[in-house]
Image (cartoon, rainbow, N blue to C red; front, side, top):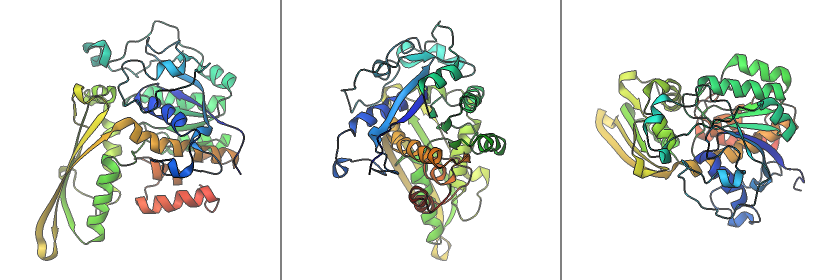
Length: 367
C-alpha cells in the first residue's frame, strides 16, 4: 500500500544534478513499474520516485535565484540532457544561498554560459527557510571543493532538525564527530560523494573485484575522466580536489585484493572539454598478471551523461533516508551509503551493498 504523504526535500545547488533529479521525479510520475526504465528500485518502503517533492531550493547564480524551480533547472550554465521537458509550474522559488568557498576563483575567467555568475542578493537565513518549508531532508549538490559550505549546510540541517544527503566529496557522513551529532538528534544522514548507476567508479570497482575473484594480480591502473559541465570546469583548480581524489581512489582501493602503492593507481578527474557538456568520458586501463605470472591488460572507454547517471542513485538515497526518518534512526545509514556513495562510512563490495540495502528496505537491517 503506497503512502499518501510526500517526501519533502530541500536542495542546495540547482545545477545539472538537481535538474536531472527533478526531471526524473516528473518523468516517472504516472508510469507503471514495467515502464520505469533506469531505476534501481521502483518502490522503496511504499515510496515511488514521484513521491518526492522539492519544497525549498538554494543557489547563488543570478540566473537561478528568485526563479521558480521549473525555470531554474533549465537555466545556464546547466547543460545536461533534457529528457522531461514538461515540468509543472512550481510555487517554490530558488533562495539565495551562502557562497562561502562554493565558487572557485578561476571560474570568473570563463564565458558566462559555462560558469557561475554570483547574485547580488543577500543570503537568506537557511535554517528559517528550511523550517518554514517543511523540508524533511536536505540534499547537498554543492561543487567539489566546497569544504566550508558543505559543513555549513550540514549544520543548517542539524539546526533545522532534518536529515542530510551529502552528494559531494566532503567527508561529513563518514566522519565520526558528525555522526555523533546526528545520532544525538535522532536524524539520519547518507553520504559521502554520489556514485553513478553505471559510471567510472562503479565500473572500475567491478573490474577490480573481478580481478580479485579470478585470482589476477592487479599491478597498475588508471582512470582518466573528461567532461564539459561546471563540475569539470570547477575541478580545473587542483587545490579543490583532495577530497574528490581520495574519495574516488578509496572506492577502488576498498575492493582490490591488497592495497596498491600510490604510484600504481591514478584516478582522475582529469580535464575539462567544453563541447562535451554533461557527457563524461572515462578512459580506464588495468594491468595485471594471470596464471603463470603472464601479463594481461584491459582498456575501456565509457561514455555516460553524468547527471542523470547520478540522479539514479540519489533517488534511492532520498527514499531510504525517509525510511530512516520514519524508523527514528539517527546518524549514518550505512547500507544505502555504501550502495550509492563513493566514500561511505563503511565500504562493502557492490554485491554486499546491494543485498544490505534491500535488507534495510525490508526492515531486516537496522542501518
